Length: 227
Image (cartoon, rainbow, N blue to C red; front, side, top):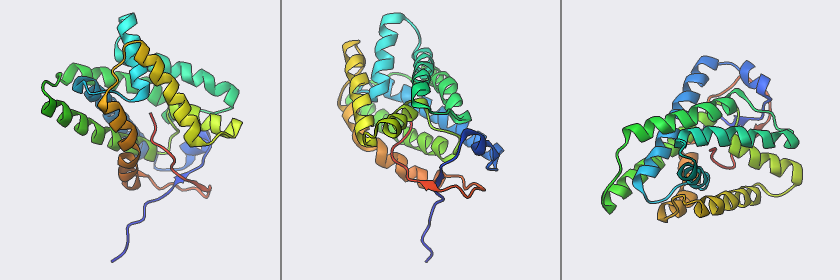
């Protein structure tokens, strides 16, 4: 039996990403992935069991501003992109799409998904959202059109400071989690479960979602799911 081997992610400049072929397929995959990711974000909110660290911050800000969750996600996406400038990071088409569409799909999800009542329903919704989140992340990362703004911030810190990627990610997410918690964001069992499970779940889906490109650029290892 032949063992399945997925393509690898290519290390490409934003322009090379667009020239690497299969663009219509990759664009469709990108927006399907971002839509699923945003719907999963809404599912976590409706489960009431806890949010991902960045979403704890996003939700906390919504409580104090009256803005929709999606609007806050978009605003913070642009703010994080500004932090890319001193890190000399270049956004790809997928990065910009992430900033704009993720928040829209999150608000659509909040309009469609009812609040879960009772622990069994909450757990079912949370686990379902976790799987959808992992699939969405795998699809949009696998489209190879650029990282999300938050993941790009972490990889940029790693590249420019020499701090390990794991430490950069942990440090940033702890900071935003604490700020979001003080603002009233939803922190709970689900926050811990998300932190532990999202990496393996996304990796599981990603191996089937990477679109093979016409490029001779060296491949890069998948370190962490985007957000």
